[in-house]
Amino acid sequence: MMIILGIESSCDETAAALVTGDRQVLAHRLLGQEAAHAPFGGVVPEIAARAHVEALEPLIVAALADAKLTLADVDAIAATAGPGLIGGVMVGLVTGKALAHAAGKPLIAVNHLEGHALSPRLSDPDLEFPYLLLLVSGGHCQLLLVEGVGAYRRLATTIDDAAGEAFDKTAKLLGLGFPGGPAVERAAALGNPKAVPLPRPLKGSAEPHFSFAGLKSAVARVVGQYSPEDLAASFQAAVVDCLIDRTTKALRTAHGATALVVAGGVAANTSVRGALQTLASAHGLRFVAPPLWLCTDNAAMIAWAGAERFAAGLTDPLDVAARPRWPL
Ligand code: KG4
Ligand code: ZN
Image 1: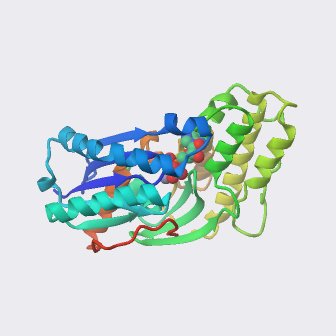
Image 2: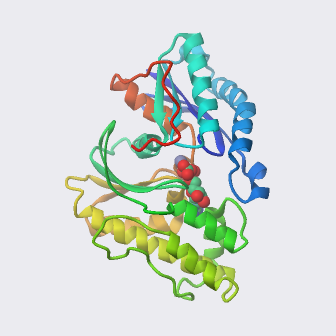
Image 3: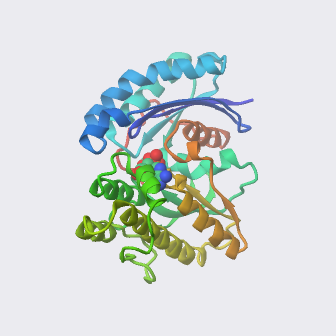
């Protein structure tokens, strides 16, 4: 059975995982850097890159030990090659290249977004192409028709902030700390989602895209006038409304989609998942959401994307470049 080592280091999680071609996660190790970045209220690229240098090698050693494997047992090495914070991406990619070279294994340069996009197929063996994917993370908010490995049709993207970015900025405004998404969700559970009138940017618009900057600005204007709990609940309800409106529109053009799928860090949000589940049912579609640990950044999704690419005969030369920007 094919075994892929996956490496992830594009943002503030350092991770290594071993995944098989038949969807067994043999090991997955992850080290978050929240504590290092929390004093700054956001991810500091230089601190992130240095932390990846320190954390990565021990994590790879630990993952191999967990799986009772050595590098010799691995069929290929998949590393995130972008998009992301370039210092961190280079740490992971160069490490992947060095291991591939030393062990004489093929290298697979994985687009981090492809990792998120294919991750639902790791947790759900029945998920077939094509599917409509809502990819909602800290850096991205997109609707993609996933037609096959390497075949992604982008139907919509954000014209300003990503959904997770909006959660993080709102958390900062409300003094809820970092990372913001889970903190806003916890506060929202204690608040009234109808308490604060907030805009739904681009809702009902003829264009397919997302926008969240105006929503964050609207929160900024009324901070202090409402409780953080009511603000968090109202903000979260507005985000969910926008996501559902744009996804509903995309469903009209996503011909042949077998399922509605959500991935990325914001897919960990219970309200987001619940609303999408309802939307899928209303359209007679299956709803697929990976388990929470597979939604936020991790290396199993990179290893799995590597497994899918490797099975399709796709490998990369050792001089492949790290790319800070890399649209799918
Ligand atoms: O996919 P991810 O781990 O990293 C990126 O590739 O960006 O996503 C991280 C984002 C952050 O903005 C975080 O605040 C958000 O996902 N997030 C959430 C939740 N958990 C993580 N947003 C809303 N509710 C959550 N429970
Ligand atoms: Zn991500």
